[in-house]
Each structure stands twice: as C-alpha cells, then as structure tokens.
Length: 321
Image (cartoon, rainbow, N blue to C red; front, side, top):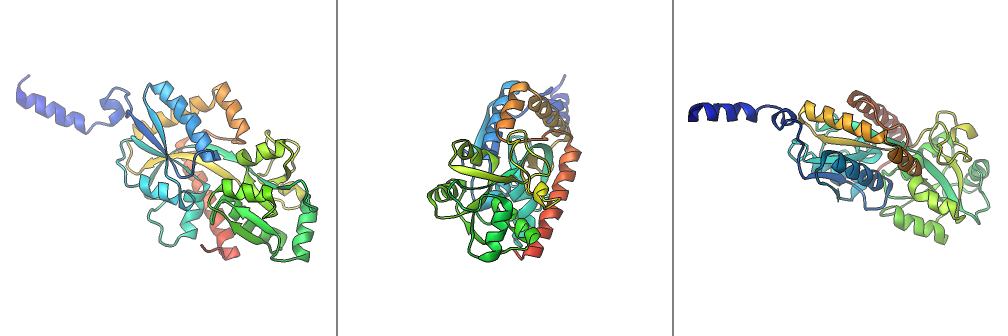
C-alpha cells in the first residue's frame, strides 16, 4: 500500500465510531465526576460502579469529586469535556431535575447538553429526628408544625437538595409551615441534628441509616411510594395519609452531548450487567438504591418526568435560592 492509500485509510478510520475503530476498546483512563463530597450516596454508588466497570474493561476509572451548588458545578464542568467517553458524570436529582427550575441562569441545558446512559438507582429519604424529640410520628409532627408555624426546623444539605425539596413538597401536601435550615452538605447538617441545633430532616437513606441503627435517630417515615427493603418497618409518607408523595433522590450516568451511540450502548449494556451481579445487588440495597438499570430511553424519559414534578413543586412553593 502506498503512502496515499495509508493516509486515506487513516482518515477513514478517524471518522469511525470509537468503539468500532478500536475493536471494542474504551477510553483509558476514564473519569467519573461526582458533584458531591466523598462519603455521600452519590459518591458511594459512583465508586462501586467505577470499580466494577474498571475491572470489567481492564481500564482505570477514577472518581473525581467536584462538589458545589448541589451538583451544578460538576454538571457544568462535564458539558465542557470532549464527548469521547473519557469523562462521564454521575448526575442526580439535584443537578438534572431541580436545577433547571431553580437556577434561571444555569450554564447548561439538560435536554441539549448531555447523553443519557443509564439510571443507576433511586433512593428514598428518611424523615428523621433525635430519639428525645417529643413529636416522633408524622401526625404528631404535623400537629406541632400547625401549633407553632414557621418555628419547627428542618435541616438540609443546601438549597435545592433533596432534603430541601422533600420538605417543600411535604409543606404543600400537609398545609403546614416550617423553617428550612440549609447547610453546606449532609455532614454538617447531621452533626447539628444529632447535637440538637435543628429538629428534623428528610435525610438521604445512606446517610441516615447508620444513625437510625445506632438508636441516635428515629425514622418517622420514608419518601418513596413503597417501602424500601432496606427499611421494611418504616412506613411511607404516602401510606400515612399523603397518597402519591414521592420525594426521592436518584443517580444516573450521563456523558456530554454527542457521544458515539455505540459507546453509549456498550456502557448501558455493561452497567446493566454490573447492576445484576449479586454482590452489587446487596451493596445497592445497603445504600437504599433500588430500581436501577434499563435502557437509555427509560432514563431519558425518567429525567423528563422528574423535571416536570419538581418544577411544579418549586413553582407552587415559591422556592428561590
């Protein structure tokens, strides 16, 4: 083959999809960006899937924490990366479903700037309080809020977090007023909840469960439509008199817009395989993460439903940041 033919072949190869061009190879190393500090639910799920994906593909998958603005900083960072699969985002409820309605000058468009890959899991929150709280049932809490409107405190990991929006949804449904106290992350909020500086929180299940197991916190209710297998004895808000109440966080993998469809399909297929592995199933249960997996189309549709649901809550509750 002469030099002209070599150059022509190289040019043709350059426009082939990455997965085809490299005979199934994937980027090495890969980065999985997380918009929250280490130790939270999104981070734990990300590290589990990164480790499994790296082992399956024999590549380095590095988790990179870029915390801030309830995940918006990480999402904004991802959309500026090359769409070659070398940088992905473990997005979630905050930066994909809530941020579009909460931040009028958001630097990205959820519908335009991302390639959905797969829903990793949905996790309920637990409405929790200290064991010494006098109101430790949902009816007692509602009665307390009605007797002392605007004084009962609920902590959150920050404006726009699942703790914050779950509270706003509950205030709307129960017709009560309560005081939202935002923190810079769940760690600081949990310290003040245990220390008595705040009264309640709709905390994420991975963070709340160890404190509930130790007896330091009481789990009053959980926030999905059905009880999580991780907390089978804790009733849902829905079954306690508020049908349809569903205020859960979720995790899902996305890439920048323009990713090669063949690589997206391979990622989806292999991540579905990983989620079905028995040790991963058990680990995800401990995180309270359920119902992950499925097609790219399922995840894209799920994102649209979540955006619409939380846009309605934000509008009706007049939530601003």
